[in-house]
Length: 78
Image (cartoon, rainbow, N blue to C red):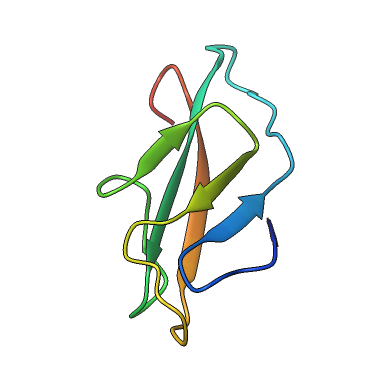
């Protein structure tokens, strides 16, 4: 994952596309973030996208450190 230049209200991100090895087909990326600790998984509180980039804006505030996890999910939920 590559963070872009953050502002006081947004954090742009991009990452390398995943390859589905299960044969069920790619479904989405799930992006989760926290200002407290790295999220353990991508099961709740995620933003879904099919793109390899997104911009985080909800709850983003200057002067804070954010911990981010991006998960690739296939059609079987893996």
